[in-house]
Image 1: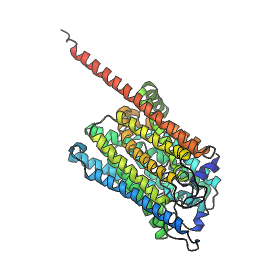
Image 2 (image 1 turned 60 degrees about the vertical axis):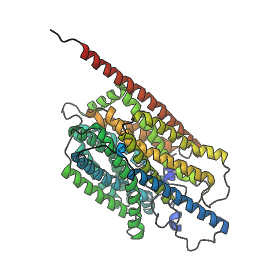
Image 3 (image 1 turned 180 degrees about the horizontal axis):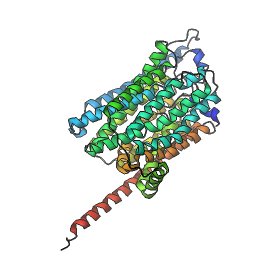
Image 4 (image 1 turned 30 degrees about the horizontal axis):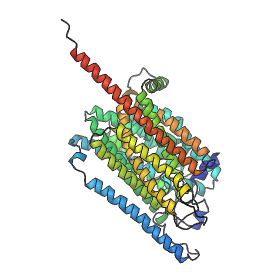
Length: 526
């Protein structure tokens, strides 16, 4: 989920070989400290991460033993998470399951299929974006400008195009996402900078549509078909569990298979992404009906913007929700660009791809927990305060370990004790991310008015994209501990605002209930 000072600094955050065991030629493209593209950029080479270099110098026995021990540590963490996820999914009781209808299950499965195909098209591209640009001969500054163009496009053009979904139709907007992203994939075949820039702009527009149009269509269609509003959380949880968890891992491995093992080259994952997007578009065109936020012809785009702005300004609940989303997602996207240097400050040899897969497994664990919480009808506004607080603690962990755990001055080697502790904390943070997505979707479905849903959701992304651009512009201007400390503060602020949202929501419900009771007590006119 695409989520990193001059432009040189931005590229610096994306540069480098994403996995241990890559060839020396690729290693020269950048430092192993860096991370090509948010969340999706470290799976390339998972299958080859343990392959030895032919001309590598002999490893000292003590260092070899330490490396072997850490290999066991990685597998233990991954295995424990996998066992927990399997246990949660297989051990669901009646309280964790909601009785639904066959019509709803068919509707849910159709949406989850489409969402998974859309996310496959997104995740497949990540591992090879930076690498492809570097293969075309562009330097870090050029590549940095391409990435900034993507974020800027999402903030500017994406907001406009995404907002049109409320007027022109959400199904049409979802198809526009597919077309935009397919065209973006096609541009990767050209080594021309201008063509690649157009591709990044199209990709930015597509990102805004991915995170607004599909959810808006789902909520409207769910309500139009008369399904229980509580069932929305089932679809949200399942879509996140698969689309942001399992699909991410499989897509990364499949991209590696195409580009590395089968030797089709770094453009192959983009071609595969276009194919998945085309399949998803065919399913949308053949099985989805159209719905609108405001189907009237009386409002132009500016009027739609005014309606959305008025809703945010006049309803504290919507404003709080937007602030909470921006604070959490801004911290999450910043974390994406910080976890690699945090775990390997002295160029430790860490399996980036395997760690990324572990993070995605943690996210699956979180979404599985969220499905249980939502099925038991617990108040989202209540438990999310705890989730935000826990996530804040996990991101302050690098600051604490930097102070309390002595750092080694030796370059290379295996992950340190402090790094191991941080890895466990980061897995906990990713579990919080897994809980966050279906929960924030549930709150958006409750608080955002239908007539301007896509517009308001894209408004929420404006400060988010601006925040990411500012952070990335200055990512090398501050120590990594300062950046993590800032993220931790933002997450604590999100917890405080979540508390305020619960209070305001409860007051609103109490006031509405009191007015209904007064209306019932009034005598009928003779």
